[in-house]
Length: 422
Image (cartoon, rainbow, N blue to C red; front, side):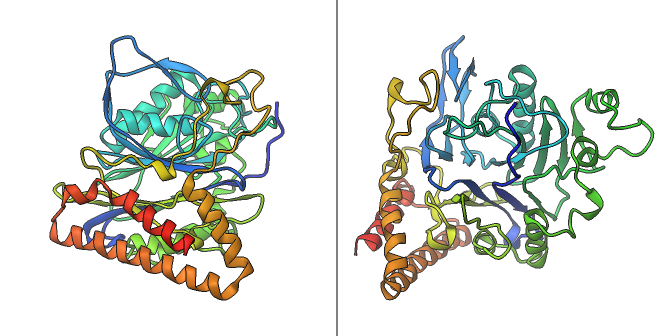
């Protein structure tokens, strides 16, 4: 069994109206991963699959379903699943590494990141995505190395799942799980700890019995999931120092007026540790705006680059025939990929996509030449602001030119690349 690393990686947030402004649900996530890991943004169209088809996930093969929805994903480029993403029906999911009393399984099964993508591909509402994930968890289990390295990095998973109407938190320990529906009009965040306490709206049928069999719960006092399945002091969760608490405070500070820009500001916050620096850092970020009015499009912003404070949140809208996101898609290596060979992870290929390479060079220039760096930063901030205003206009007026939207994300990437090349 691998030694448990210190809890680190990721923060996910949601605000439901009226905590979020304008009758919109606002979702956001920072993906905190090893600093040299490349995160790519890719679009996978909806697809039909023949009866009996199999699906190869990161490590294991599972049964495919007849139809999969179109998805846009931000993912570590070495694996099949995703850290975060959205589908054509306005479902958004982000996951977190969590640890508890139960040992983490090193055996290869479904990664939490595989479950994110599977939930998006197979469900058209947040609660259906939750059901997809827990059913797959029961059937196939979770486990396997979550890092492109011969050193094992394994964990249980928690998920924040949102759609236009509601949001759910799903937290797991092995095959056991608890789910909490986010209170209407409220805010919620998850970090690297179990956070569901006594408000449990759905649960594994043997959740409490298993806890009793392990001696974690006496069957008499009120059942508190986080306190029972982990070592968290749930009485101090929102007052102790730490990213979960800091995220909770930032969401509540802006409650009632949270917009996409507010969420981006939260994700860029370095003082709280939410915009992480160091050996693990924020390698990709996402913000989604999900209008409650079904005739308005959901808008999903992705950076595809590390450090949101020096990145552009670029908008994506689902329409037919979206231009493929070539410049944020990493190269592939087929059967020669070291992830697919046994033993795994014996070498690391260069997985950098074009935007990542240019952003990396620009970051070096920003550090070396302060004036040029400041000018470049101002230009990418202006680009982002112009795209946010453009998206706000679409949401206010309800007018969507699908001929332009097919290139929306790709065109913004081109404009960002020009800034880095100037």
